[in-house]
Image 1 (cartoon, rainbow, N blue to C red):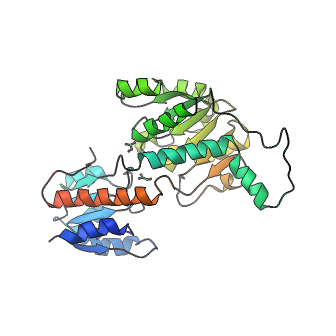
Image 2 (image 1 turned 90 degrees about the horizontal axis):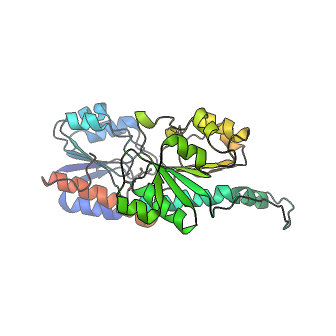
Image 3 (image 1 turned 180 degrees about the horizontal axis):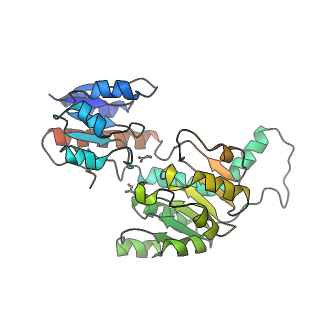
Length: 319
Ligand code: GLV
Ligand code: GLV
């Protein structure tokens, strides 16, 4: 029996799997665990199942001790985990790719529709009990059919978003570090381009790359300037990929038409410059927030931890 520490509330199905084989110490409060309590609890853990709100760094690995074998992050993004520090200590780090792909692409598309069709503005107007009536020019947005979607980062989520775009009659271009399966590119009718071209030709730019030093402020003032003034920016990946201050300025001055954000640079804080703008849709990091998806993510993280504790290969190790 090993000791498994779970750093936050996760669906019961995952806890049951873990409890069937090990002693489980799970933080079950709805408030977050806090650093001091986290460092205290991980001492002596053989596995840590972590949420993206907890920083897994060398200090935490040291606090856990040399018996620690695996950190199973309940997220596809792992910018909260210092993977090289894990590797240096012989700790396997895992994430949850695949299981949240469709849910996150759904939210990306939801934001695309909300931003281009001004749904948030319309909702706010009704809730404020403003007078309104149907009018030929009332709250006109912008159509998607025949427009171009530019996808930055063509992993599973980028591809799933491209598939939706195709169903909406959009053309797709993408920028990606690595070549994608040519059969998938053909199926999606998606053309690989450099970032400059993507920004210049896209009517909607959707961000799906991981966050790290090489993607910090990938979209800043200069990139926003390179977009069409009629274009929209959507981010469901990680906040700091976009320079939020530059985005607020661009939205205020009409450099681009609008934006939809599920993630923020200093989460959970939202740049105050964005809060007063009508042309930005903001939702609180809901990309994977369905009952089915969160359960699948937590179960996959549990399976990763269990595999490593058994001495097997992790199911979805971070490589
Ligand atoms: C959510 O943001 C994730 O990375 O899974
Ligand atoms: C998601 O599953 C991804 O790998 O992009």
